[in-house]
Amino acid sequence: MTRTASEPLPPGAATESDATRVAVSTVIFTLRRLPGSDAVQVVLPLVRRTRDPHEGQWALPGGWLDVTEGLDAAASRTLAETTGLAPSYLEQLYAFGAVGRSPTRVVSIVYWALLRADEITDTVENVQWFDAAELPRLAFDHNEIVDYALWRLRNKVGYSRIAHGLLADEFTLADLREVYEAVLGRRLDPANFRRQVENSGTLIPTDRFRTGSHRPARLYRYNQDVELADRGPLDARH
Amino acid sequence: MTRTASEPLPPGAATESDATRVAVSTVIFTLRRLPGSDAVQVVLPLVRRTRDPHEGQWALPGGWLDVTEGLDAAASRTLAETTGLAPSYLEQLYAFGAVGRSPTRVVSIVYWALLRADEITDTVENVQWFDAAELPRLAFDHNEIVDYALWRLRNKVGYSRIAHGLLADEFTLADLREVYEAVLGRRLDPANFRRQVENSGTLIPTDRFRTGSHRPARLYRYNQDVELADRGPLDARH
Image 1: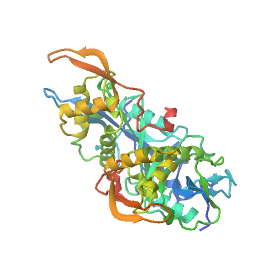
Image 2: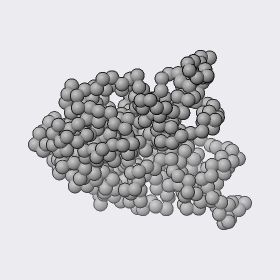
Image 3: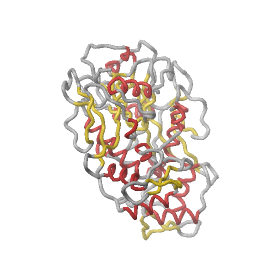
Image 4: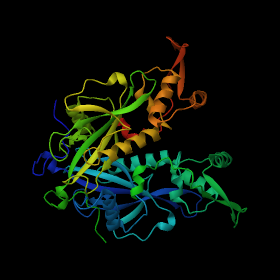
């Protein structure tokens, strides 16, 4: 029991772990309004696999970590290569490394990002957007990964400005409530919602209004002075 | 731009990424009362390295991921092997994978745990406990990793039952405040603190009191019905 911290052994001291490879995958969430409906849904892009294992199944965008790039860079690169998407900010979500999750041993470092509707660019061949609530059976353990990402999204929406990642810079309270309703998967009482966000100190009313077929609605923006609960020292790197 | 999700390639399709190895490391926090003082400090165990790179420097306990074990199991095993400690619950913290963090390319999946004082067992040779606020220069990027873990601890203590991991099952409000003060690194007003925790609904008063040299103080326990903000679907595995 006196073995000491062994990271790393000298080069050349090979062990079984050489058979483990590192991949990165990314879960991108955005909101889509259903045609002819008030409802919005959380959607994410998936890539159809063109080779085994799981040829023909849908999978999260991703790829192998290159030995000369950091994890964040690998996530951005593989996402761009597989989908054409380039969100301004990717956050590390979790490392998935169960032994049987792939025919060979693969540890996947999973990132996630939120995209506003106006940030969505045309995606490449083999990519489709799916309703997060009605996914097919995905390749590997990717259903489990999406479930985890959805749980984190629902959890974070309660104590951070995360909804901001899905909204324009200025928005009405109805816009904001719509984001919460889509993420949480349930309707919220408009009066209660208004009271809660107004009391939270996280929103700043502007003197502008959105006009249209409804009664004019005041536009708000997020108060950048309120610290996000989920940012940390590592954010300086981004 | 039509490359599709490439996780994983067929066995034998070797790339540069084969040169990347996966390690696990663990940050264990506990509280220690300074002799002859009211103050408690956050401490963690470090292991003195007995070989290069960084021979003689202190490092987080850890080791290589074995190809036949999951990430959680690797964290528990390497922690036990290097320190003798066996906390009941380890939580994944973050994956560190900057290119230059080690002479060879190493991605470290970092776990963390909280230990109550009564869970600390005798540790093995080459292990020492350090004040988290006054660490020496550690091996690799381990100072940065500890800073990140401390940030997460401070952050979580604000919205979850995480202090529970550092307390006995029943505790006084002064015990609880002491945990918060040690983690946050500042004194808290006793009356405000009492009001806040009593209003939070997270504590259940018992009908027992701690007696001794001071005025008897009521013992509390955590309300297990209040959901932890930081548990998720992955917890079912633990």
